[in-house]
Length: 105
Image (cartoon, rainbow, N blue to C red; front, top):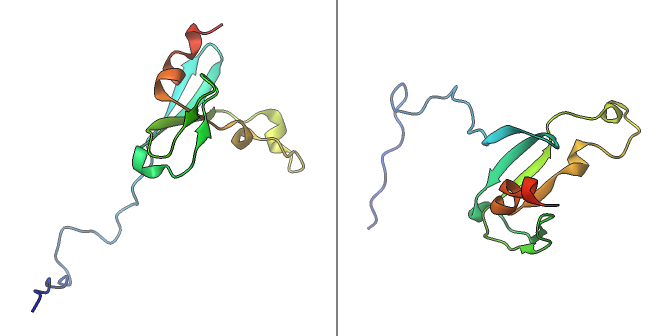
């Protein structure tokens, strides 16, 4: 017969009921082309194929990479009828391509 784990006791334990959920790690990077929010994505978190704008190659599922978008909304983001916003500028990059983007052109 399998063993059962004891249930949590009321009033004890290491878990707190008012604990905040885990936050995603996002950084704002300043560059010559503006300020960008950069979120690192683990390979386990990807289930889709994306196209890297740096090298125009596929980022296959299971590949760690970064997602970037402008840090500050444009003026037109404040208009509710505008269909193009900062979210439309979100792009998936290979980490190495993102780091070396200033060396291109």
